[in-house]
Length: 517
View (cartoon, rainbow, N blue to C red):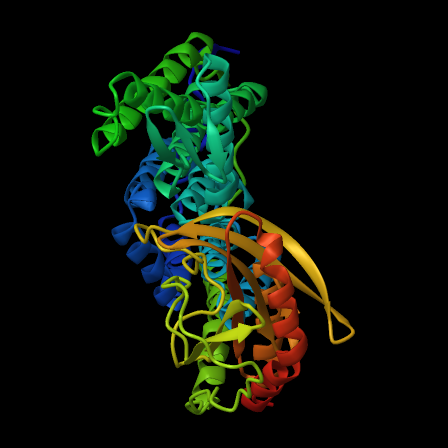
């Protein structure tokens, strides 16, 4: 028996009998299954593209689909040698994925809807083309998930890591640092670690490129995993070094360099150098595709399913993927336009007081907003109630809803979860200290959804989803109580506590009056 050394693709092509042509009809029929999720969830797909367009952090999404197609094209010799044999269990998973999309629609969780849609494409390939082809396209199909714009929840933790690293490095250098939250002062000037300094863009770029590089460069699983882990950890460390270097450049130049747009240029140049070094070092352990022996008596591949059977699988994909958008349309169609919320019934016992601050939360427009100032003993107190109702304003819970707006002059100096016993019941709140024009403010904040208070965005979304499913309403409120202080926020807490003791029943009453059953 004669044996020659060839590549994997050539071996698979040779394994196909000469009289066994690729199943052209089955390939084209199964290809319709890939288009079906795109057509059924066109609105979700459009939301992904719109984020690519408006956010530089996720602009890399425009190259994900072309790279995926190129990766699939590289395996064309192997793919044509594989049988098209539908995988029926994949339809059940596709149905569950659609259910997840539906729940995310009820809870208005965009990122879950987008991920559910993205996962449907590999599932459609598996259902229509079968296990062999889906296995051959495993990485290209998984790479599609990098197109989903996700990661904003990492901004705050990354800001904290960067601030900690920078301050610790400065102190090790011998420079005295006065830190307050994510802001710090050194003898030459003041610095703030803001969203642009979080390094999220570096992290997303590094992980995306790292996964692609590991797939193309290595063959063994452990090398791929190790390289991806390094690509995940390195940008976090590099971003801390970048922030430290920028502060040192500003400090050494008496705050004439690296204090404007140029520090962004320095940052990207440094990140580019780090990635170049990562890929260069990684190339020393490169593994080429193994050569295999192709035998003249190679085992023939399995035959493809009949066109009718493939068409049945495509029909199954259409039903499993399309039933949920249709049901969602039915639910939304049955909901009448809700009335506007009314907060004027809030009865305040404390006397009104003049505004003591211009600070306002940077939240999406609400269906109704109440913002008043009161006098509690000798301490002024502010109260904000923003009521959200579907169809009348923005989202109650969103990554873009923040206590401080960029370039507003206000910034957070501390955050903690606090529990107060009000009217005989525990009330959990998020306490945030702010500093900005005019002084310092302590804020107590919580959500109220269907009479259930919470400080968690995740719990809040679950409560909204449940409420939407049971009543068709996603009503909810964001409540903020705030008061000024000089040095210690503890001096303002008694007034906040007293106001809540006197007005929690009134707050509950106005929320209950607006609730839709």
